[in-house]
Amino acid sequence: MEEAEVVRRMIKRLNSLPGVYCFRTHGGTFQQKGTPDIVGTAHGRFFAIEAKRTAREKPTEAQLYNLKKLRQAGGATFVSHDPQVQEVVEWIATLST
Image 1 (tube, rainbow, N blue to C red):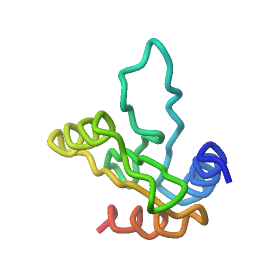
Image 2 (image 1 turned 135 degrees about the horizontal axis):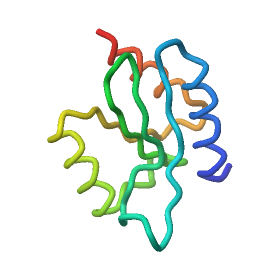
Image 3 (image 1 turned 90 degrees about the vertical axis):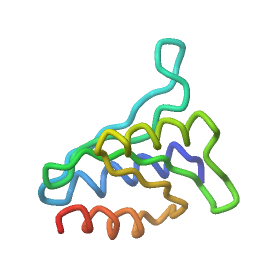
Image 4 (image 1 turned 120 degrees about the vertical axis):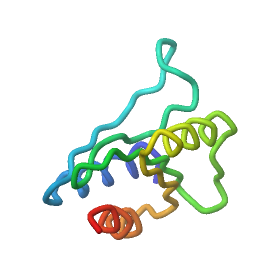
C-alpha cells in the first residue's frame, strides 16, 4: 500500500470522528521541506501527523525538525506506522482528555 493511500484512510477515518477536522498537506516547490502529511484540530487542540507505511520507515531530519517545532509551539504530533489507522484513532482520543 502506498503512503498516499494510508494518508487518505487516516483523513477519512479522522474526519468521521466527532470534534475532529484534518486535511492533507501536499509537498512541493512552494511548501516548507518536511511539512507533516496531515494537520488538523481535535477537540480544540492542533495536531500534526507524519504517516509512514511501516515501522521500518523513519521520518527525515526535516520532518523531525518540524514535528519538534510544532510541539514546542503547543501542538500535538504523532508519527504513525499503522496502515489500518487504529493507532491514530486511539492517539486522537487522548487529545480530548
